[in-house]
Each structure stands twice: as C-alpha cells, then as structure tokens.
Image 1 (cartoon, rainbow, N blue to C red):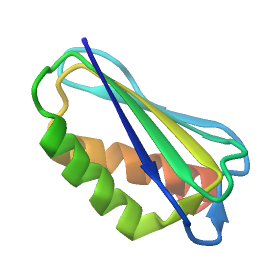
Image 2: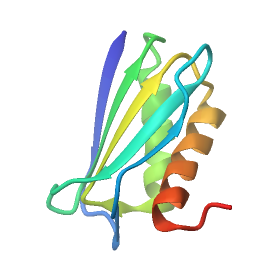
Image 3: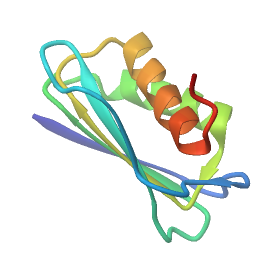
Image 4: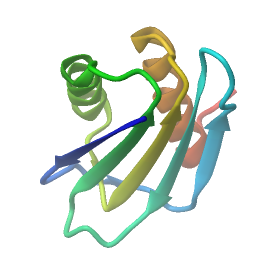
Length: 104
C-alpha cells in the first residue's frame, strides 16, 4: 500500500456540507469519502492505494479535479484497489455531485 496526500489552498465557495461515500473497494475499483473539515479554506485529499509508484498520475488527476470543483473546507479520503484515472475522476465527481445534490 502507498499513501499519497494532496492539499489545495484557497478553494472556491463550495464546501462539503455532509459526508458522502461513493464506490466500492474491490478488484480494480475504489471508494471515495468526502466530508466537511475545518481546513482554513483548503481541500485535503488522502489516497490509500494498492498500486505503488503512480504518484505523478494521482497528482495530475487530483489537480484536474481541483480545477473543476474548487472545494474548500473539505477532506477527501480515497481507498483504491487499482482503479484507472477515468474511474477515479468519475467517482470523485460522483461524490461531489451527491454532496451538493445534483446527482441523478
């Protein structure tokens, strides 16, 4: 297992209002927990992944996510079992949409 941590300062006006959990940890998938946290306007992401050595890819996916959503005072925990970057992005978007009430 590898643990990666990311912090994005000075997010936008969107903050987690309540905890949301999406996805299921199983072979080739992941789960995302998004929750409110007092972080002085920042968004923190912790990734626990079984796939070691992909830090640069995770960083690119997290930076893209941050550009799309600009969350503040939000903590995101990801438990990954080898999901592709596309699945990671999908689950992150799903978590935020569920949190802000726009999921279909």
